[in-house]
Structure formats: structure tokens, C-alpha cells
Amino acid sequence: MATDRDQFSIASATGVDVTLDVAGPGSRSFAFIIDWSIRAVLAFAWFAAAAFLITGRWAPDPKEHGPHASYYLVAVLTPLAIYFLYHPIVEAATRGRSPGKRIAGVRLVTQSGATPSLSALLIRNVFRIVDSMPVFYVLGLVTTFVTEKRVRIGDLAAGTVLVHDRGDALDALAELGSLARASRLDTAALEVAQDLLARWQDLNAAHRASLARAFLAQVESDRDPRILLALDDAGLRARVAALVTDGGSA
Image (tube, rainbow, N blue to C red; front, side, top):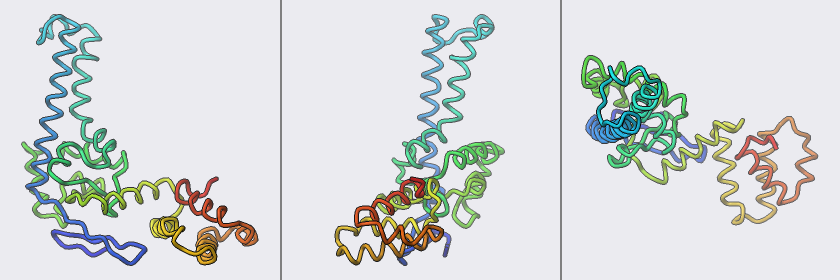
């Protein structure tokens, strides 16, 4: 994987590399400010509404209503959870494109261009504590100027990169990464399988059967070759599709 300060390339099994543009501190800060504003408003709105429903006041006196468990659970802990878990939950649901990132035209991906896993997003979020030191994310901002792919410490720990969103190219990489996590096939084999399935109807029957059997023999070397020879056109396509969707467990 070749890299430079502003771009990095991801080699694909088809031989065509995908080049991603790294997002700089400006785009990163813009996206963060938008997301910070959204989570702050959501957390405060929840707190005010819950406090009013529980106590009848928008800003109750904690000394008066503090002992009630419902007050702490609903009016205090829930807004804190919204504020601190906003990023991993929203980014997991939007495949690395929170509202702020979408508006800023950036997207969070792994080093291979895939959508980060929930565990990676949680790790990245935990390290916000470090990145925010000593105040106002100074440490995190400084690291985006000196690291190779302009990442903060949380990105280094989680293996993530913030890149400019290129739509279809990143969607394809993200889908491939999601499939790879659920499949026993490696990324290169998945790319070959997806390409074969996409071109299936354009290939003549004999050619696609030959390609499918060669591919299946390579990735399922422990399977009896006679089974592959017995599969018809529909069976071969179904077998390749099963490898893509669930690793061939069917």
C-alpha cells in the first residue's frame, strides 16, 4: 500500500488501485464542530424534557430532586450517554458518515477503505479523552499535522482514517469490507467472486462455468472435485454467491 501525506492507495484484486484523498485538519474540524453541536443540542434537549416531566421544572434543583433514582437515570445519565456515545452509534449506523462528516464531505474508513467495525469506533471514541488534552482537542489537532495520514491518536489506536467521500468507490470498498468480516474468504477472493457474479450474465455458459469451477476449486480445496463437476449453471452461481454472503457455510 503506497502512501503519501495527502493520499493513499489501496490495491485491489482486479489490479486497479483505488486512491483515497486524506481529509486535512480543516475538514476534520468542520465536521467535528457540526457533530458536537448536534450531540450537545440532543443531550440538552433530552435533559430539559426529562427534568420537566419528572419534576415539573426545566432546570430543577439537584438538591431537591437528586435522591430520586428516576431523575439520575432518565434526566442525567441518558443525556450523558447521548453525548458520549453519539459518535460510535451514529457512525456505525451511517457507515462512517455522521451528519457532520456528511456535510463536510468526509468519511471514516479503515486502512483498507472498509467501514470501521463497532469495536474500532468505540476505541476511537474512548481515545477522545486523550486527544482532547490539555483543552479543546489541542493534542488531537497537533497529531493531524504531523502524522502520515493526518490522523489523531484515536485513529492510530483504532486503525481508521478520515478521507474525502468519493461516493460509489468508497461504498464498494465499505461493502467489501463488511462482507470480509462476515466471510472466511479474504478480500482478494471476495473481489474476484463479486466480479464473477456481476459479469455472470455477460459470459457464455461454458466460460462462466469454467471460471466458477476454477475459483471454487481454489477457495474450497478441501471439497471433493466431483461435487463441482456435478453442479449445473445455477448451482455454480449459487455456490459462489453463498461464499460471498456467508463464507459458504450453507
